[in-house]
Length: 267
Image (cartoon, rainbow, N blue to C red; front, side, top):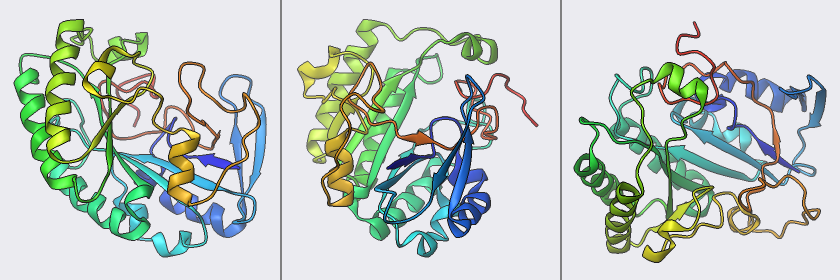
């Protein structure tokens, strides 16, 4: 069984104590956000093949990694260079890089993955800004991760409500980003990926098969997974979505581009 903690909120950043209590108690209850059905999942190293995390600030839970030592883990860490005007409560990216290095040393390079997303273009956060910052980050992270996944902003209604200045990243802009990021990544031996972004950037060597595929998780945990055909996969990629235990509208990072919160101010 794959437990997913990161699609609906940031558990490592804000709910690490609750999560560790669930580990200690040996189970977790999770509500389906669409039909309100309650699911009970058992926390046991024999039944949980992998716990997948996705966080912008894993530090609070990383401090307690010893309590997760019995479980195989895979960590997505999103590290982006936006300021407080975009990511109100996200730590400075240089601090997150330090935590990422510590995390990689603890769970191994195959157990971590860097996300640089979502990418959007404004006068302040223009193409040159992204290219310069990506190179800076790649130079810091290349010894601690083997890959990086990027995506471009999705203009859901809730995103436009909280970030009305956001606009679609054009095909030309995507190609410029893809080509330049690929050149930088090659220099630092980082494999570039996209997920649910089509195959536009494959021409630059991007892997568009997905960010949390069976192959990725098997490499992270060092075991083969027996996955029922068609189960827990995103329709637009090959990712194994697993059982998500988070709750929408609870993340307190305050990111203006967030798709998991309906409103900008949630507290």
